[in-house]
Amino acid sequence: MAIAILVPDIGDFDNVEVIEILVAEGDTVQAEDSLISVESDKAAMEIPAPQGGVITELKVAIGDQVSEGSVIAMLEPADDAPVAAPEAESSPTPVAPVAPPQPAPQAAPRRAAPVVPTKIDESSFAKAYASPSVRKFARELGVNLGSVSGSGRKGRVTQEDVKAFVKNVMIHGGAATAGGLEVAPMPEIDFGQWGEVESKKLTRINKLTGKFLHRNWVTIPHVTQFDDADITELEVFRKAMVAEYKAQGIRITMLAFLVKAVVAALKAFPRFNSSLDAAGENLIYKKYYNIGIAVDTPDGLVVPVIRDADKKSLVEIATEMGEISIKARDKKLKPADMQGGCLTISSLGGIGGTKFTPIVNAPEVAILGVSRSKMQPVWNGEGFDPRLMLPLALSYDHRVIDGADGARFTTFLSSVLAGAAEELL
Image (tube, rainbow, N blue to C red):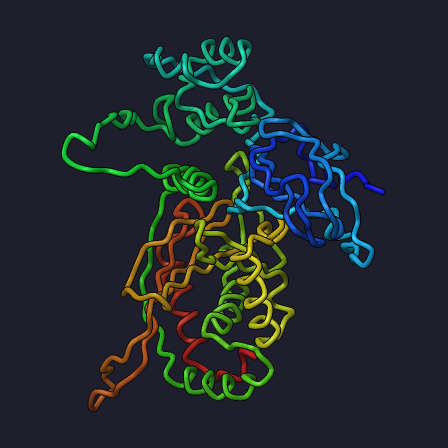
């Protein structure tokens, strides 16, 4: 007898759109096979099959709106098909995980002074995705809706978005435009007039990541501090551990040591383990140590988080890093896997390069970029010694962190990596 497959608990999302159907009537599926993709205003998710069997009837089409409990399809279970664990039933798989967007900042409790209107661009104002009441509200405040990022469904601009925009302008100054800057729109160009071209759609991860990175770059005053860490002895120690744990299938990478070293640095400099509140008036210090790890996938960059890294051994962190990397590339990360980070590490050492300037992953206040290590001659007071040096690039929010503290942080981090490796275990 066929059973109904229902949309499981998908968090706070309601009436999400079906954007892709991954099976057809008559298909045989296994437990955890993806059936459909749905998209909210924050992520795209795949809904898995709760158990194996044959799809006898599809109950949704592309463009339909579904919520928790909606019927997706009818399934005739296989006699020996295992049923998915309850956690799998209630945890759809996101296929467009990115550093999760933060809620729109709330307006300050005190009355804000009115914004003196600049010239509103009627063309971009008219194209903005907003309700009539929000348009009226924006005009009263002299805000050009075309410059406001919407946090509502499908990027819809809400009244809270307009309030947050005005507050940001009042705090940081500037006209009522994107991030307080007068930015000319990009011109529309027919590139085909000069030769053959091909157009390919950006992946959902590319589009969402681009939106958040643009916001972070425009609204956060970035400074990047560069340094080199001497990891000569640490690399010898790491290679010995690689040989020791190879038989157990555990890959001991330099990134695992970096996670432990960053935790030590965050404890020594707690201001780096903080975030500004929505009003930009208070600093929230965190008493936990969750480290984000930027992972390169075929669809784009995702940032899963290693939670409570201070309470885990180096081997536990190395094991978890291997697991989350596989989950990221197989599109099995959950939204909760990418939330709550304190500081992100972006390592390009396995690819190449000498230095780069990473963009802060707000609401974090700093991000550590790591490039490929190389042997360099280092003066020891009498001559030059060959030492393995690891390039570090620490980008930070200058509203929270001064340049002197940025230099102290990288100096401390370098000393930890150059010190006794056993202390990082």
